[in-house]
Length: 313
Image 1 (cartoon, rainbow, N blue to C red):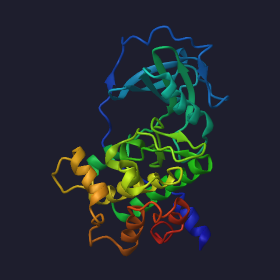
Image 2 (image 1 turned 90 degrees about the vertical axis):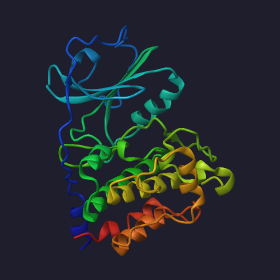
Image 3 (image 1 turned 120 degrees about the vertical axis):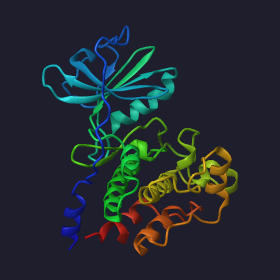
Protein backbone atom coordinates (compact mmCIF):
# COMPACT_ATOMS: atom_id res chain seq x y z
CA UNK A 1 0.00 0.00 0.00
CA UNK A 2 2.79 2.43 0.89
CA UNK A 3 4.41 1.84 -2.52
CA UNK A 4 1.11 2.55 -4.28
CA UNK A 5 0.75 5.79 -2.33
CA UNK A 6 4.29 6.80 -3.12
CA UNK A 7 3.76 6.24 -6.84
CA UNK A 8 0.46 8.08 -6.77
CA UNK A 9 2.02 11.18 -5.25
CA UNK A 10 4.72 11.17 -7.87
CA UNK A 11 2.04 11.80 -10.47
CA UNK A 12 2.00 15.42 -11.60
CA UNK A 13 -0.58 17.97 -10.60
CA UNK A 14 -2.35 18.72 -13.86
CA UNK A 15 -3.57 22.30 -14.02
CA UNK A 16 -4.93 23.75 -17.21
CA UNK A 17 -4.78 27.52 -17.58
CA UNK A 18 -5.04 29.84 -20.58
CA UNK A 19 -1.70 30.54 -22.27
CA UNK A 20 -0.07 33.82 -21.21
CA UNK A 21 -0.14 36.83 -23.49
CA UNK A 22 3.35 36.81 -24.92
CA UNK A 23 4.82 40.15 -25.97
CA UNK A 24 7.54 40.17 -28.57
CA UNK A 25 10.56 42.11 -27.37
CA UNK A 26 12.70 42.27 -30.49
CA UNK A 27 14.87 45.34 -30.37
CA UNK A 28 14.73 45.78 -26.60
CA UNK A 29 18.31 46.56 -25.51
CA UNK A 30 20.13 44.20 -23.22
CA UNK A 31 21.37 45.40 -19.81
CA UNK A 32 24.59 47.38 -20.16
CA UNK A 33 28.11 46.44 -19.13
CA UNK A 34 27.73 42.87 -17.91
CA UNK A 35 31.05 41.29 -16.98
CA UNK A 36 30.05 37.86 -18.10
CA UNK A 37 33.26 36.01 -17.44
CA UNK A 38 34.19 37.39 -14.03
CA UNK A 39 30.84 38.08 -12.38
CA UNK A 40 28.92 34.89 -13.06
CA UNK A 41 28.26 32.14 -10.56
CA UNK A 42 26.77 28.89 -11.77
CA UNK A 43 24.98 26.61 -9.29
CA UNK A 44 25.18 23.88 -11.90
CA UNK A 45 28.66 23.47 -13.39
CA UNK A 46 27.20 21.37 -16.20
CA UNK A 47 24.92 24.21 -17.34
CA UNK A 48 25.52 25.20 -20.97
CA UNK A 49 24.74 28.84 -20.15
CA UNK A 50 28.20 30.35 -19.80
CA UNK A 51 27.31 33.94 -20.72
CA UNK A 52 24.09 35.89 -21.23
CA UNK A 53 24.98 36.09 -24.92
CA UNK A 54 24.24 32.34 -25.06
CA UNK A 55 20.55 33.20 -24.62
CA UNK A 56 18.12 34.61 -27.15
CA UNK A 57 15.18 36.56 -25.71
CA UNK A 58 11.84 35.34 -27.03
CA UNK A 59 9.01 36.82 -24.98
CA UNK A 60 8.19 38.64 -21.75
CA UNK A 61 6.72 36.27 -19.18
CA UNK A 62 6.08 38.89 -16.53
CA UNK A 63 6.98 42.32 -15.21
CA UNK A 64 7.12 43.61 -11.66
CA UNK A 65 8.40 46.56 -9.67
CA UNK A 66 11.75 44.85 -9.23
CA UNK A 67 12.38 43.63 -12.77
CA UNK A 68 11.32 41.46 -15.68
CA UNK A 69 11.19 37.74 -16.46
CA UNK A 70 11.89 36.64 -20.04
CA UNK A 71 11.40 33.40 -21.88
CA UNK A 72 14.72 32.67 -23.57
CA UNK A 73 16.28 30.03 -25.80
CA UNK A 74 19.85 28.80 -25.77
CA UNK A 75 21.30 29.63 -29.18
CA UNK A 76 23.23 26.36 -29.53
CA UNK A 77 21.17 23.72 -27.70
CA UNK A 78 17.73 25.34 -28.28
CA UNK A 79 16.90 24.62 -24.63
CA UNK A 80 14.34 27.02 -23.15
CA UNK A 81 15.03 28.94 -19.92
CA UNK A 82 13.45 31.69 -17.87
CA UNK A 83 15.70 34.71 -17.39
CA UNK A 84 14.86 36.79 -14.32
CA UNK A 85 16.39 40.24 -14.65
CA UNK A 86 16.43 42.47 -11.56
CA UNK A 87 17.74 45.94 -10.87
CA UNK A 88 19.97 45.36 -7.90
CA UNK A 89 19.82 48.28 -5.51
CA UNK A 90 21.05 46.19 -2.58
CA UNK A 91 23.62 43.59 -3.58
CA UNK A 92 24.02 42.50 0.03
CA UNK A 93 20.34 41.48 0.15
CA UNK A 94 20.41 39.72 -3.19
CA UNK A 95 23.62 37.94 -2.19
CA UNK A 96 21.60 35.89 0.33
CA UNK A 97 19.17 34.75 -2.36
CA UNK A 98 22.03 33.94 -4.71
CA UNK A 99 23.80 31.94 -2.03
CA UNK A 100 20.63 29.94 -1.35
CA UNK A 101 20.05 29.22 -5.04
CA UNK A 102 23.62 27.94 -5.34
CA UNK A 103 23.02 25.51 -2.47
CA UNK A 104 19.73 23.86 -3.42
CA UNK A 105 19.06 20.97 -5.79
CA UNK A 106 15.58 19.48 -5.57
CA UNK A 107 12.91 18.34 -8.00
CA UNK A 108 10.38 20.24 -5.84
CA UNK A 109 12.14 23.60 -6.27
CA UNK A 110 12.58 25.65 -9.44
CA UNK A 111 16.16 25.11 -10.57
CA UNK A 112 18.66 27.92 -10.99
CA UNK A 113 21.31 27.24 -13.65
CA UNK A 114 23.43 30.38 -13.47
CA UNK A 115 23.65 33.84 -11.93
CA UNK A 116 25.15 36.93 -13.56
CA UNK A 117 25.64 40.18 -11.70
CA UNK A 118 27.19 43.62 -12.03
CA UNK A 119 26.77 46.87 -10.10
CA UNK A 120 23.28 47.53 -11.52
CA UNK A 121 21.71 44.23 -12.58
CA UNK A 122 21.22 40.71 -11.30
CA UNK A 123 20.22 37.94 -13.71
CA UNK A 124 19.04 34.47 -12.77
CA UNK A 125 18.91 31.78 -15.46
CA UNK A 126 16.09 29.57 -14.23
CA UNK A 127 14.18 26.45 -15.15
CA UNK A 128 11.26 27.45 -17.38
CA UNK A 129 7.88 26.75 -15.75
CA UNK A 130 5.67 26.79 -18.81
CA UNK A 131 2.25 26.99 -17.14
CA UNK A 132 3.01 30.00 -14.99
CA UNK A 133 2.11 30.41 -11.34
CA UNK A 134 -0.51 28.92 -9.06
CA UNK A 135 -1.85 32.45 -8.70
CA UNK A 136 -2.60 32.55 -12.43
CA UNK A 137 -4.15 29.10 -12.27
CA UNK A 138 -6.45 30.20 -9.45
CA UNK A 139 -7.56 33.24 -11.42
CA UNK A 140 -8.45 30.96 -14.32
CA UNK A 141 -10.08 28.13 -12.34
CA UNK A 142 -11.33 29.85 -9.17
CA UNK A 143 -10.62 26.87 -6.97
CA UNK A 144 -9.60 23.21 -7.25
CA UNK A 145 -10.99 19.88 -6.05
CA UNK A 146 -9.43 18.33 -2.98
CA UNK A 147 -7.41 15.60 -4.80
CA UNK A 148 -5.63 18.30 -6.81
CA UNK A 149 -4.97 20.34 -3.66
CA UNK A 150 -3.67 17.23 -1.90
CA UNK A 151 -1.13 16.63 -4.67
CA UNK A 152 -0.10 20.28 -4.60
CA UNK A 153 0.31 20.25 -0.81
CA UNK A 154 2.42 17.10 -1.01
CA UNK A 155 4.87 18.66 -3.46
CA UNK A 156 5.18 21.89 -1.46
CA UNK A 157 5.73 19.89 1.73
CA UNK A 158 8.47 17.86 0.04
CA UNK A 159 10.12 21.11 -1.02
CA UNK A 160 9.84 22.55 2.48
CA UNK A 161 11.27 19.39 4.02
CA UNK A 162 14.28 19.65 1.72
CA UNK A 163 14.75 23.33 2.60
CA UNK A 164 14.56 22.59 6.31
CA UNK A 165 17.20 19.90 5.93
CA UNK A 166 19.34 22.62 4.34
CA UNK A 167 18.45 24.96 7.23
CA UNK A 168 16.65 27.37 4.91
CA UNK A 169 13.43 29.22 5.76
CA UNK A 170 11.58 30.23 2.60
CA UNK A 171 9.63 33.05 4.22
CA UNK A 172 7.22 33.81 1.35
CA UNK A 173 5.14 30.76 0.42
CA UNK A 174 2.19 32.07 -1.62
CA UNK A 175 0.44 31.21 -4.92
CA UNK A 176 2.58 33.53 -7.05
CA UNK A 177 5.74 31.82 -5.74
CA UNK A 178 4.52 28.32 -6.62
CA UNK A 179 5.14 27.66 -10.32
CA UNK A 180 3.80 24.97 -12.64
CA UNK A 181 5.71 23.25 -15.45
CA UNK A 182 4.38 21.66 -18.62
CA UNK A 183 3.88 18.33 -16.77
CA UNK A 184 1.63 20.04 -14.24
CA UNK A 185 4.23 19.75 -11.45
CA UNK A 186 4.23 22.48 -8.82
CA UNK A 187 7.59 23.77 -7.57
CA UNK A 188 8.69 26.38 -5.04
CA UNK A 189 10.27 29.56 -6.43
CA UNK A 190 11.55 33.00 -5.38
CA UNK A 191 13.91 33.09 -2.42
CA UNK A 192 14.05 36.87 -2.07
CA UNK A 193 12.60 36.70 1.47
CA UNK A 194 14.49 33.56 2.50
CA UNK A 195 17.32 33.12 4.95
CA UNK A 196 19.79 30.48 6.02
CA UNK A 197 19.31 29.63 9.67
CA UNK A 198 22.55 29.99 11.56
CA UNK A 199 21.07 29.94 15.06
CA UNK A 200 18.81 32.21 17.06
CA UNK A 201 15.31 33.35 16.18
CA UNK A 202 15.93 35.96 13.49
CA UNK A 203 12.72 36.43 11.50
CA UNK A 204 13.47 39.29 9.19
CA UNK A 205 10.84 41.62 7.75
CA UNK A 206 10.71 40.43 4.14
CA UNK A 207 7.78 38.54 2.71
CA UNK A 208 4.09 39.07 1.98
CA UNK A 209 2.01 40.12 4.98
CA UNK A 210 -1.15 38.31 3.84
CA UNK A 211 0.65 34.96 4.13
CA UNK A 212 2.71 35.69 7.25
CA UNK A 213 2.10 33.73 10.44
CA UNK A 214 0.93 35.41 13.68
CA UNK A 215 4.39 35.21 15.25
CA UNK A 216 5.87 37.08 12.30
CA UNK A 217 3.16 39.75 12.21
CA UNK A 218 3.04 40.29 15.99
CA UNK A 219 6.04 38.68 17.70
CA UNK A 220 5.36 40.55 20.94
CA UNK A 221 2.03 38.77 21.34
CA UNK A 222 2.87 35.36 19.95
CA UNK A 223 6.58 35.09 20.65
CA UNK A 224 9.30 34.00 18.24
CA UNK A 225 9.08 30.54 16.72
CA UNK A 226 12.24 28.49 16.79
CA UNK A 227 14.22 29.40 13.64
CA UNK A 228 10.98 30.23 11.81
CA UNK A 229 10.15 26.96 10.07
CA UNK A 230 6.64 27.06 11.56
CA UNK A 231 5.95 30.24 9.59
CA UNK A 232 6.23 28.35 6.29
CA UNK A 233 3.68 25.81 7.56
CA UNK A 234 1.18 28.60 8.31
CA UNK A 235 1.70 30.04 4.82
CA UNK A 236 1.05 26.64 3.25
CA UNK A 237 -2.22 26.40 5.20
CA UNK A 238 -3.36 29.75 3.80
CA UNK A 239 -2.45 28.62 0.26
CA UNK A 240 -4.27 25.29 0.60
CA UNK A 241 -7.45 26.97 1.85
CA UNK A 242 -7.17 29.57 -0.92
CA UNK A 243 -6.97 26.78 -3.49
CA UNK A 244 -10.27 25.38 -2.21
CA UNK A 245 -12.11 28.70 -1.98
CA UNK A 246 -10.62 30.30 -5.09
CA UNK A 247 -9.95 33.53 -3.16
CA UNK A 248 -7.80 34.80 -0.31
CA UNK A 249 -9.31 33.00 2.70
CA UNK A 250 -8.52 35.09 5.78
CA UNK A 251 -10.84 38.01 4.97
CA UNK A 252 -14.47 38.07 3.90
CA UNK A 253 -15.39 37.80 0.21
CA UNK A 254 -15.16 41.17 -1.48
CA UNK A 255 -13.18 42.78 1.33
CA UNK A 256 -9.93 44.47 0.41
CA UNK A 257 -7.22 42.86 2.54
CA UNK A 258 -5.66 46.09 3.81
CA UNK A 259 -3.08 46.13 6.60
CA UNK A 260 -5.56 46.55 9.47
CA UNK A 261 -7.86 43.79 8.20
CA UNK A 262 -4.93 41.42 7.74
CA UNK A 263 -3.55 42.08 11.22
CA UNK A 264 -6.96 41.36 12.72
CA UNK A 265 -7.53 38.21 10.64
CA UNK A 266 -4.08 36.76 11.29
CA UNK A 267 -3.53 37.70 14.92
CA UNK A 268 -6.85 38.57 16.57
CA UNK A 269 -9.60 36.28 15.31
CA UNK A 270 -9.94 33.11 17.34
CA UNK A 271 -9.68 30.72 14.41
CA UNK A 272 -9.83 30.63 10.63
CA UNK A 273 -13.20 29.60 9.24
CA UNK A 274 -13.04 26.45 7.13
CA UNK A 275 -16.09 25.58 4.96
CA UNK A 276 -18.29 22.74 6.18
CA UNK A 277 -18.28 21.37 2.62
CA UNK A 278 -14.64 20.28 3.01
CA UNK A 279 -13.78 16.71 3.89
CA UNK A 280 -12.81 15.99 7.53
CA UNK A 281 -9.25 15.29 6.38
CA UNK A 282 -9.02 18.65 4.63
CA UNK A 283 -10.44 20.51 7.63
CA UNK A 284 -8.01 18.82 10.00
CA UNK A 285 -5.02 19.46 7.70
CA UNK A 286 -5.77 23.16 7.29
CA UNK A 287 -6.67 23.57 10.95
CA UNK A 288 -3.33 22.14 12.03
CA UNK A 289 -1.46 24.44 9.63
CA UNK A 290 -3.37 27.52 10.78
CA UNK A 291 -2.84 26.99 14.49
CA UNK A 292 -2.03 30.50 15.71
CA UNK A 293 0.36 29.37 18.44
CA UNK A 294 3.52 28.23 16.64
CA UNK A 295 4.37 26.00 19.62
CA UNK A 296 1.29 23.89 18.87
CA UNK A 297 1.46 24.11 15.08
CA UNK A 298 2.10 20.91 13.17
CA UNK A 299 5.49 20.32 11.54
CA UNK A 300 6.30 19.56 7.90
CA UNK A 301 7.24 15.98 8.80
CA UNK A 302 3.92 15.45 10.56
CA UNK A 303 1.97 16.91 7.64
CA UNK A 304 3.66 14.52 5.22
CA UNK A 305 2.06 11.70 7.23
CA UNK A 306 -1.37 13.34 7.38
CA UNK A 307 -4.31 11.44 5.91
CA UNK A 308 -5.19 14.34 3.60
CA UNK A 309 -1.86 13.86 1.86
CA UNK A 310 -1.31 10.10 1.95
CA UNK A 311 -4.82 8.64 1.62
CA UNK A 312 -5.92 10.18 -1.69
CA UNK A 313 -7.20 7.61 -4.22
